[in-house]
Every structure is written in C-alpha cells, then in structure tokens.
Image 1 (cartoon, rainbow, N blue to C red):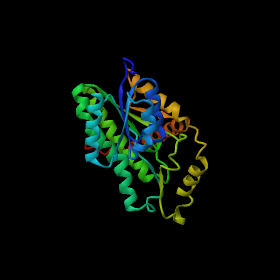
Image 2: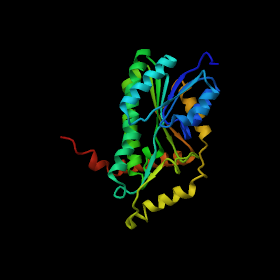
Image 3: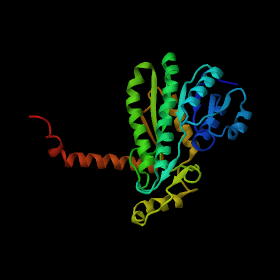
Image 4: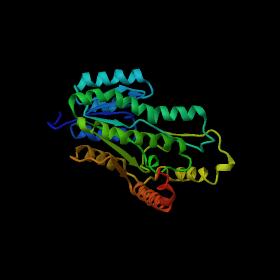
Amino acid sequence: MTNNNSKVWFITGSSTGFGRILAETLLKQGDRVIATARKPEQLEDLIAQYPETAIGLRLDVTDKAEIRTVIEKAIAAFGQIDVLVNNAGYGLIGALEEVSDEQIQRNFDTNLFGAINVIRAVLPMMREQQSGHIINMSAIAGFTNELGFSIYGGAKFALEGVSEALHGEVAPLGIKVTIVEPGPFRTDFIGRSLDRAQEQMEAYQGTVGKFVNFLNNIEGKQPGDPQKAAEAIIQVVNSDNPPLRIVLGKYAYTKFGKKIESLTAELDAWEAVAANTDFE
C-alpha cells in the first residue's frame, strides 16, 4: 500500500549502511523505493517484504551505460523519481604518498564521478516534472578533512563544490539539493567500506597512524545512530525550506564549528595582505 503523499526515492548503495536503513524506513512509512546495489541479491529480502513499493536493481555507479539503463527502468516502474540519494561510496585511509594510483582513481570514480553521472542522468526527468530533491551523501571529512583522508575527503570536498553550484543552477527549476555530512555512525564504513593503503610508511605513523588507530578503536562504538540519521534525511526532504547542508552527529557538528572559527580567525589575521592585492 502507498499513501497519498508517497514519494519515489532512488537510492544508490542500498545493500548496507545508511542506504539500507533509509530504504527500510521509507518503505515502512509507505514511500516507494528504487534500491540499487552492485550486488542486488543483497536486496532480495527487502524487496520480498515490499513487492508493490520496492524494486531492487543492480547498479555500479562507475558504469555510465548501466546508470542510464537503471534510470530508465526506475522511471518505467514508478513513472517518476522524486528524491535521488547519492549514497554509494567508500573510504580510503592512507597518507597521500602511501595510497596507490589505482586506489586514488577508483575512489574518485565512485565517490565523485559516480555521483555526478547519476545526477546528470536523473536531471532531465526532474526538469520535466519541475520538482525533485537531490541528496548527496558527503562526510564531515568533506568540509574539514582528517589526516589520512586526503583522497576520500578530497573526493567529498569536490562533491560538495559541485553540489553548491548545482543548488543554484536547479533552484529555479523547482529542484532542491542537500549535502549530508555525517560524522562517525555505527555502520560498516570502517570495516567493509574502508579501503586502506597497502604500505604504511614510518614517516606518517605520528600523523596518519594516529587517525588509523582512532578509526580502529572506534569501530563498533561509533556514537552516531544510523536510524536517527535516516529519519533526519527524511525530515529534510519533507521540509518546505531544506538546508543546503545538514551536519549529523555531535562529533561532526563540533568539528564543523571549529573549522568555521579557524577560517574566520585566519581570514581576519591576513586581511591586510589579502584584501590589498587589487589594482588601485
């Protein structure tokens, strides 16, 4: 059964973590969900529970042709896409010098270019219907990065830059954009979803090594509740005036505030130099 106000959600990376919990929560409340994953068999139990309101499709967001095909299937199934959630992604931990060329390329292909290509495939439909909401799952590392997350955080920084411009480009078309910045939540991000540099260099043990130890020690004890995160995302989508950014969890909220304070202090300290570089 669907409710009269139900939306159609297209969620990438739906097999585990935020994507899975968000899909389950939406289906329980009567929305319709196109759940996608690289291994769609992991969605079979969910689809079996909600055969009328959920479909599960294979999607590797690094495959442009597959993206187009899956979007066409989604529209054929439910007639529209009201909310796109770019959730597919994974972390990469290691100093910039430690990670391999292949790891760098693959991480950007998934976390940045994958999201961009899904957005570009969905936008024609949203423009036509003059409505829609794009949710881009970033991370607090996409606003204030961590030592060892140079590539992962860099990809998320880039996604946030794309999202800021996109927000203004599509606002006159009735389309909304929100960046979600979670801190450490109790998902499988640190375990299954975290790629690691194959080589750990002694030179970085006092910097990157400390953050690696922090992640290892916090696994399974992350303060963030994924269910509450899903509910916050739904609240944002249902809002008449959704934010461009929403920061989830006290850890992320504190780091976000400290970054703003640091930026303001640095801006003020160098004002005399920076502001006097224009032609007279």
